[in-house]
Image (cartoon, rainbow, N blue to C red; front, side, top):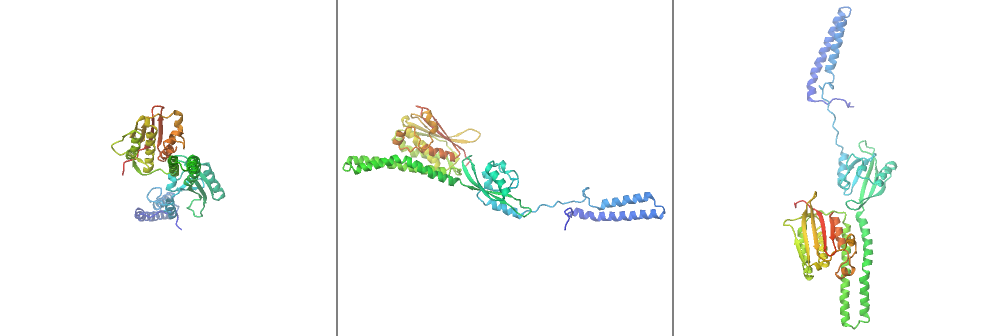
Length: 430
């Protein structure tokens, strides 16, 4: 069995070994000569014995290991790579859900990339409580350490978007010396499932509430056509036009509800595509031009010469531009014009502003905070007459939130309204 304090041979030490051996032999011979001379003299010369002892001691110091003098080189054994640790890291890297390993003190041993993306303050070698301050999870770790029984708890975060996880906490025990005993945490994302449940409940509630009126109208007209107006050609034509309008309203309502539900389902997933906001604004101004011409409104676009890039979903950003420009044309038509602009804004973080300004009757201050609520209308009759569903600005708000942007609404009665959406500017197109 090898001594851990043994010296690792090296060329410098091997060349010095013959010199030390020769010094030791010479010292021993000299010492014996001195002792022999002292004994021959009959009475044992103390000085000769003293110098013999000094010679022996000097020989031992010269010939022995030179750790303190630095003449011998001691090589500290390098720790060997642990193949099990490498395999564990490789396995963790392939797991898409966050996984964290902590020891018996709740100090992070290892984590995969998904865990670092979820918890910004997570660091190996630091307590998990520095990055995760949820009492249910921390108490669950302590309980698993005490009982060695797995359990499940829920973890929720609200910034930047609301997300919910089911955390599986299980004991991590091993008889291998270099494997730490502790706890493994596995985060299962429940956000999509919870949003789907909420979407179903909201869809049923909203559809049953908003579809009740047009359905009642349709049933009433059908009964009239089947009864008193059976042979009235003029009444039949008029009623059929009204029924067609009610059916189209229900179709728009269902389409908007489905669009809103799809946006909410993906609210926690930030877009990663690079989109030119100026091109989107230009395209939508051209699309809305026939409607504006029909209502006698002039739409003027002020756009930069070069691309203005943001990270976004093209279809959703087109929906934002469409809803804002159409609303300005419909509800601000009395002003006769609508200004659309895309511009960069100065600040510590480069931003892009997309604004739509109308010059219509404006909006009273008490209505501004509630404009983005579902089915909230400043004027219910006017909104229905213009084909509105009450969901346009709610869709805009949810799309802007998903893009980590900000929606500003400014208006005064008689001065028109201005809707501004701000996004962080993306880097140059690769």
